[in-house]
Amino acid sequence: MVTDLVYHDIFVEHVISPGHPESPERLRSAMSSIAAAGLLDDQKVNLLAPKKAPLSEVYLLHGKAYLEGLRAKSERGGGIYTMDTSVNSYTYDAALLAAGGGIEAVDRVMQGDSENAFVLCRPPGHHAEYEKAFGFCFINNVAVAAKHLLEKHDVERVMIVDYDAHHGNGTQRSFYSSKDVLYVGLHQDGRTLFPGSGFPNEIGEGEGEGYTVNLAMYPGAGDTSYDQAFSQVLEPIVESYNPDFILVSVGYDGHFRDPLTSLGLTTSGFAMMNSRLKQMAISYADGRVVCFLEGGYNLEVMGMCSLNLLQELAGVSVTSFDDENKESDIASQYTEKLIEKIITDSPLL
Ligand SMILES: [Zn+2]
Image: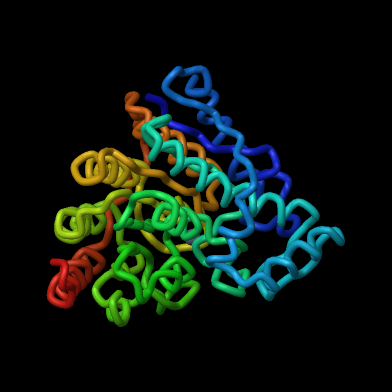
């Protein structure tokens, strides 16, 4: 079976503003690394241009008036939209195609047409809230896909893992009172990074209590801390929750060379997480996993990490890069205490 690489040319037409870090160059770098490695010619990889998401499905996650406003702004040629978000004439279409790509990717996995998928999209989605474009995001792609799985397929439990350096506030909020979606975020502590949320005491509410897990990492945390988080939190919790499907918000801004954040991951740290996520999907969810691109602002890192993710999903050998970084003792010690607290507080662990 194939791995779908979901990509549309309009993803690189959406521009927030000239020189903005969330730039089309991010996807160009990813695609050129993937092409240079020969993966676009590999029979295991299926390049898939998506269709737009049906509005009825997007309205389950976002207000109609909000989306109409975005459409009108794009149709008028764009401009400043919210404090940190501008749009151009392609933004509305790109956002609907990104969300549609996620829906098509999970449909194909459920139907057995593909094994797994990487939705290599812009704009990203995990900060977008019900009626708010936020943090370079407009439609919450991963949340739309999770809702689609629950409503249109015989799926009862979806696990979302978000390893972008920033907390996935929009995704968390979409399912905060639901036990049908387990959200696990690994990100830099919100006291030191946008959007300022995602603390360990945010664990869900009502029926959803315990189904939100936030691993808020100390600045400088890297491969060692993330390895511990997988061994002590993610791998035990996937066994306990036993999801039908795993969705992953991938962001390469946790790399130590990223210009916007202060985490300490390397390409081999990301490769370690990808491999363990795929194994978690094989062990508990019949291999069903779809990954969505969120952030990542060092262009070279975007290329290396996107290539590595696609290699892992397609089951071809993963290229190793030479970018070593050792996390500080203070970060490792902080992570140990953080994991202890999460294990104590979580009913699933
Ligand atoms: Zn991010």
